[in-house]
Length: 141
Image (tube, rainbow, N blue to C red; front, side):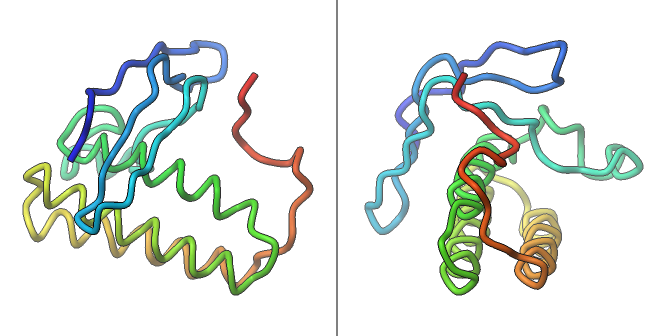
């Protein structure tokens, strides 16, 4: 369940959106996830060749899920261990699927998109290493 719709401004020089109003999702289990103001995200990670099948990164019922997913992945990237990273990343992927189904994305499309992010998460888990706080792809500035 969402409290508000996404409100963001596009940052043309870096090709990302910046959240202008905190964006909150309440999971089926009652956990509250809030994406803070100034969080930057690049939409759903859909390869250009798949846009005709899935849709573009900022259009579709999967957009809200992609924002929450990217925020949770950003948090996972700050994990202090590989085990914690894998746990957080799996949770991010699970919530992404939950939101897509809640927002009316078809079972086939949501499962396909979930498998894509799950595969990427597993690959990232193989090459994971502890990161310095300043190496994130995102910033609050």
